[in-house]
Image (cartoon, rainbow over all chains, first blue to last red; front, side, top):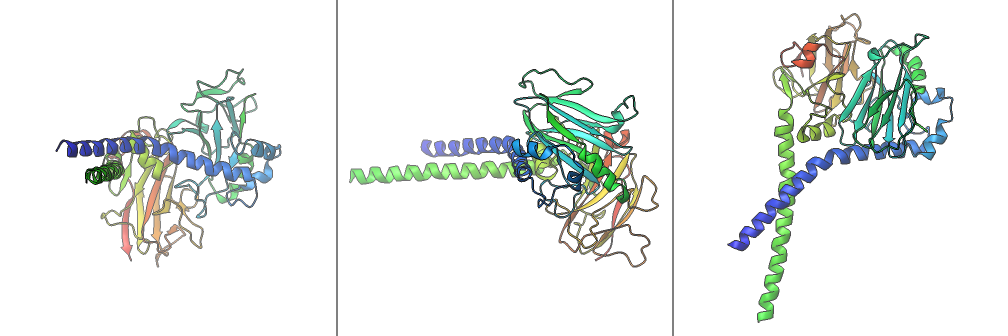
Amino acid sequence: MTRARHYILATLLIALATHLFVVYLTPKLIMSRVMGVMSERAAMASTADPDTSPATAYIEDDRATALRSRAGWNTALPARRADASSRTIVKPSPDLLYTACLFDLSEAPLQLTGPVTDSYASLSGFADNTDNFFAINDSSLVADATGRKFFNVVLRHPDTPETPLPAAATLVESPSTRGIVLFRTLIPGEDQLDGLYRIQAQQRCEPVS
Amino acid sequence: MITATLRRNHVGNIVRWLLAGVCGTLLGIGSVVLAARFIGNAAFIENGPWHTSLATGSREAGPYLRLVVAGAGLLALNRSEAIYFFADTDSNGDKLNGACTYQVAGQLPQSRWWSLTVYGADHYLIPNNERRYSASPANSGGSAVNQLEVVVGPGRLDDQAGDNWIPTANVAHFQLTLRLYQPGAAAATNPAAISLPSIVKEGC
């Protein structure tokens, strides 16, 4: 009898441990898998990638080198408009242009910049457990002296080494060293798509050195 | 004789411990699925055929809602930025079927921008010849900013004017996602009480 009780107790303890393990680790595993897939694709940096945005044609700086040297991390990854072949992230909106940035703040803070137009655009951050820890949109931005509005955020983690931060940037603290940042740019009409790809080409995600 | 008994006991013990391990693991995984279904889904607020959660994406999301969102709504924004309403059934409670035609119409809550998107059961966009996946103020013709009137189904309605149609390509089951960007206070604080479009089956 006592022995049977031991086995039942062991079964229940294993069940409890498995339960907690699965509940807390699954979101992290899903995020890590998504980041892995995005990084692999980005590192290939090939135009054959079906998710490559036409925006890449408008990128003038030497982004390709950064892409290769950082294996897709800490650099802007513009995606083309979502359609039925977009299968990396669930429920993509075909009405938005997404630019992702896989961040790793263990060595340096990251500066996120990008101009906005009159229509909806947002910049948001997701921790390694999927939590959306910050989101700002164009309507909260203040125009500069020339009347232009742009995102200017510096992302850091409490463990990120201290560095002088760029002026005028909004400082955001991430609860995890790794995660995903997303620029969302609304497509208010087909005729504006090309112009928005040019905006997308200017969205940047660069380590602060 | 004694050695044989001992060996039998030994093997019996190993089998029992293995059984405890396998049963425990299965029980653990099974209980997560049940908990996600009941506790995770209980975090959703119902409004007719639509459901939403005020905690989606936010740090207040409990572990079970986080699990549901990680599986079906990864990288979703928190409620100050956007609210997502999901529908798996029509206004009568019947599962949305890609072979049937539905009229999705009604007043939308105040927001800066909205869109209605059709997703397959796998949470991805459904391939279709027209490459149409959503309705929004951009492609809904003359609709007023906060008015939705769109046909969702395998084909257009016979008497339908305009191109307010999202194809479902005859898939067995599909879902609707209504996104409200920068929602007004009513939708953001009390989504159960606002008026949302109805989803009426016109035929199959």
